[in-house]
Image (cartoon, rainbow over all chains, first blue to last red; front, side):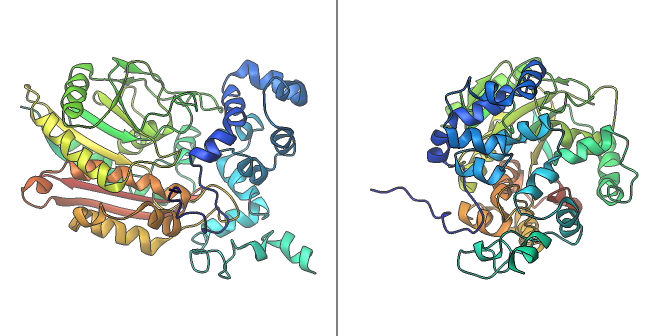
Length: 147
Length: 284
């Protein structure tokens, strides 16, 4: 019998379930290692060499080097673990969350001050809300892309 | 006999802790958030508990992917505020209540909930931000705290129903403790927020306020809400709200007592990526 996963049709969202966790085990454990100041220093000194100490996939390593959190999540990363990379880079949670939308830091902050992203059109894949695939990237970056 | 006298519900956004620690609480962005807790700080002084049973979640701090306990009770004598990557928060260490915690562990496990007993654990913003919101910046927290960590990071997380039933078991456990302790139970996390993917920044005021209404008036019905409703309506991290049902399940009206008094209710958007919700319910 197949497992019940009713969350697969939520747009712009990856649920960190047991399967994702299995895929991302080494990626997430690498992130945990950055909670020690000495490891943060070693990572910053030579990111590639530090990543090579971990049995991560090449895609996971490239996603980390590119600081592409959407790619990291697709490869099994979880945001609470990935936040340790952001902390190492001196980034806030808001900067990290915003980076996954394509919006600039200012655009994302303004959206939050304006009450946040509406759920309308963003409940199910196939609707027309801001989080849907056809509207990526968001903000000015998206306008430029479609111009 | 020990007794649960009240329950407190609040979001635990890390940026709130950072704002307080960096002296930014008077800035226009943060002022409305902290104003919502002015009443609560006075209320806590007027209604001082002997122990706070604090339900929260660890955010990949004490628990990595090496071990993922669904329900973990802290039975240590003290708990150190964790370095989450930005350095530890400059807040007092958390003093535990090993005697009551061990009693609750024994009783709740005998009521068929498989708790993990944790004798050594650092505590992250999930636990310390609610204390800061309710107590301000004291030299020491006003009373011992029993940390109760719930896995809401890796799915499947416990259902709302299971959390609500667990709350009932915790109330029974507290009431069978043979010392006259005044215990408060706090449920933390939420409200609507999503921290990942192109849908990051989702906020749903209608959902949040309906959740608060139903938490007060019909917690039994609210306990039946499936995970997918939280994810779809309140964002992937909005699932933290199931932890509020643990605290609500421990209130005496659930066991046939009178309805609780709503001492305080507050809601504000945004704090960083998140909607802030807050309730204080008193047992009558």
